Image (cartoon, rainbow, N blue to C red; front, side, top):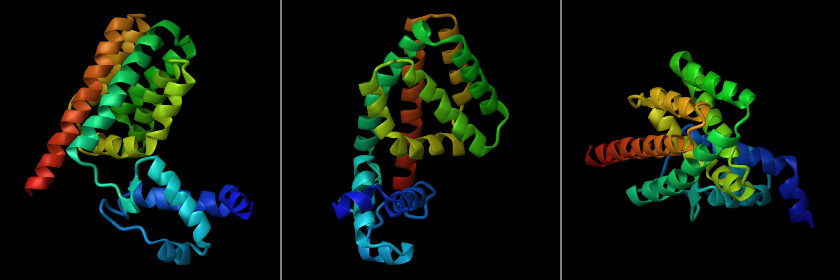
Length: 211
């Protein structure tokens, strides 16, 4: 009972957020071993919230066997294969069911992508995909994507930071297809968009391995 109380308490939530943010901002780089005792001492908490935080981050794909994930080519392909299937279908659904106010929000995400700061573009990119996934109205599908959000963030940061060509133009084309209520085109464009994200990330990964 004590463990459940501590897990749900502020120590657990704070520990989880701090460790997750350290991974996402690169402070804890891929391949780093996570040591419970060291983190507990640094954060001023017991090992229980640290252990529960690690378990959650393992479920999210950021930690594997207490080591910060360093995605391989296979990891990338597997993740994007799931995204291509689920988000392609979601885009098709969005063309049929997305209400007008959410269409306006999609358009706003596209505009921010053209002129925003790095952080603004990151948030707009996430929101763009979130709106479309939620349009599936499928709670199982939404939950699957939601549980991958942390690892997706790492790849989203890569494509935004390195200015992947035509990223925002592709968002705009997807938006236009959804606005036109053309589900088949919206699905194809989303699948192509994510495949290009994958190709870009693989190219960078291979370059880093050769360096």
